[in-house]
Image (cartoon, rainbow, N blue to C red):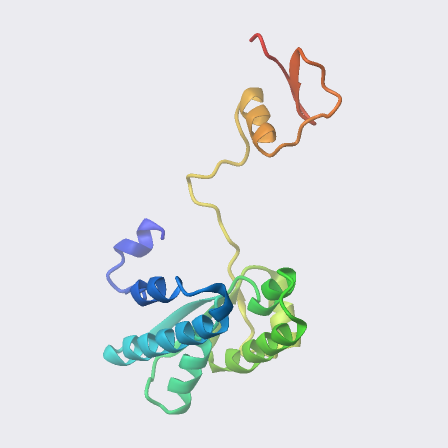
Length: 197
């Protein structure tokens, strides 16, 4: 989390407890479905407690992950138990990540329907690109029009390594090696460094 956010007195960050999840995570793989259901129930209870224990003017949530938070926020909004305004910060779609990971097509379709329905609870939407803004507007029908906030790298990231050796090291770690390199040098797709210095 950026220091400016951590130091801001008007922003309260709430983390959910993971102790119970660590216990049930040790369940045998054959019981994965039971683990997933218990995890969601546990998170729903925690989220309802967090959102009802204090008043928040705004609740900012990042998507993904959207299960179970969008459901909980929709429930609180529908029952008028929370008067907080909800902002969804869209970085991707949860269902598309499932699809890329070759999850069952039925579950992907269910995840898309979930995201489509429960994203309607938000009062405002943020996204990371104009393309996503258009996609959210026309495919998901979100209103009002999402505001684009481009991702910006923090100061610890550099745009490019400074020296040939650093470039070479990055390419070597990425295993982008030239397969025709001889025994006297280490050759990547872009660099060639003598082994004897």
